[in-house]
Image (cartoon, rainbow, N blue to C red; front, top):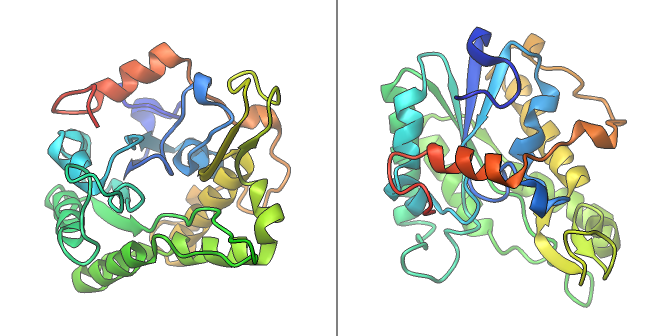
Length: 269
């Protein structure tokens, strides 16, 4: 079953997301942690089905090697879209996970782009957002800038649309400062949320406010760059989404969906 947003078989078009924990749809036990792909359907009408295949912990390497790209390519149809967003795990030191920004990262991105086009679908590259990593002086570090630059290069070389969420997030986090940016990420004190009774501080993963901001930018960019028709989107300027607009799957359903969307070992990255 593909449907993520209720559009189902009647969807005029489908948008597949190939990505990592920044875009993944989170399970209930992880709330309020939220990926931008989880809330992307808020900005599309019911003719459009968002099929979120992102996997927490995946790099472009493991997503490809573990059969998740193959699953998308088996299911994607001519005229569908594939949003491709990696970088945060590609930058990690583990050899089985890591790719070099100006080396095999670019090679793997081309696999996604070429795979989509081989199915007459439309690839779109989306750079990852930056972490909330302000230093003691309030300066924001650029931990993933090389991966955004490498993705931009691939976009130019392959004539693929590119959504620069990375530099947009740098602009937001710099303007907001450390305290302002904290409200977009997981920063919970003890007893503040039942899922994290001892508190949890995570400058890399978003809460609903941050996810909605990033998803809005992605949807807006798809229209602004004329990648999709403007009449596919809704509520791009809406600022008052109620808490009930963001939902999380129960853990069992989430695990089953995650494990089904692979042509390899479902429990693996």
